[in-house]
Amino acid sequence: QVQLVESGGGFVQAGGSLRLSCAASGSISGINIMGWYRQAPGKERELVAGITSSGRTNYAESVKGRFTISRDNAKNTVYLQMNSLKPEDTAVYLCNAVRVMILFNHSQDYWGKGTLVTVSS
Image (cartoon, rainbow, N blue to C red):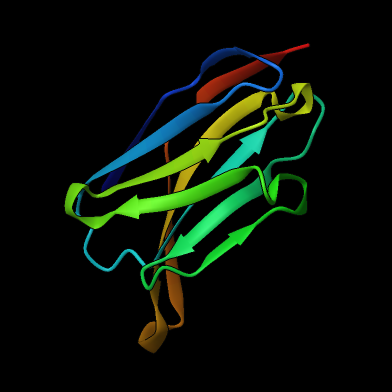
């Protein structure tokens, strides 16, 4: 099992910054991809940013140039630096980890409980 614990959410004014952290523990070997999703009331859950074990990153179009995902392998932690925050960024942000097993055509997904980010106008 993999446990994911998010932190760093809070209340911030538009234009401000926050850094989210996701600490992974448990049976974390073989985790290939980690990322951040978000879900706001009345909206579908969407991928915000992802990072592979090799360091390749991907971002939602709406956050490109404002958000940066990074990792610290020694600490088993991924981060999401969020700058120039907008009210529409308000959501619960959830950490996601995926273990892909190519030989078995199988993947395993793990989720944190989420951390709330509220951006005021």
